[in-house]
Length: 343
Image (cartoon, rainbow, N blue to C red):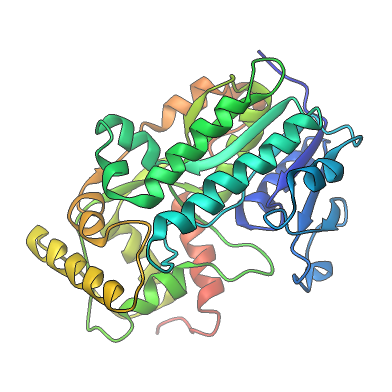
């Protein structure tokens, strides 16, 4: 069933995914509103003036305060694009960190949106939830972050009722691209870790992937055509890590080779990361042994045609977004703007 989407509130609209989603809604003639953290500066230099921007910390506000922020403004659609991802390594136990930010705050905010009379809610979640279902809960038993992502989706779905507060879940894979005013995370959390090594040592798996504007297309499509309780895997292509890293190195103009790690060494390296975390009193949202030995050493692939069919991409004029190579190029040029071309 096609739904009219005219007035959208995006929680996280100044972030990577929320920003591109905002642009796509604007292109379709929708009104778009969001909030930014009070300490965010420089937004006037790049953030679209067409977006109604206010300042607040939704995590710090009570449900009643969020309700007051949303009521009587005619919002028909709510996009939830907040929360930390799996690359954060908080103090141990990490479950408490992720549960507060991914479940408790998310439920509070979405409950306020329902109270304000908003009819449609799209939640940006993780593709790990999809693979956990395929693996009969194996991932959620090992990884606190994945367990919290699954609880986030189910808890917000439980708030909903078809036709009253429809909830659609987007399960997101690796995402590439760049945006104004933000440095892509790839440099600090990924590439910098290999800066002192003679080669790029990495497992031989692969992943589903999408350009960030493909995520934005999926957000709009879910708002218009999504079904209550629907869980949609967002993907435009599948890519081996060797190819992904090769593209990163090429566009960053870093002269290193990719070296495939054997599986036993993947587990050992993950174990060493685990020991280091424990010595510092930290715990990642993903157990590094399972990440290296299972997740990164496997092909976490998804059929790209499924979401295009389920959300009627063709009807909406969507194609799944730009190529991942283009997104990688955009990200690397932002991360390494001073690297000069070879030769």
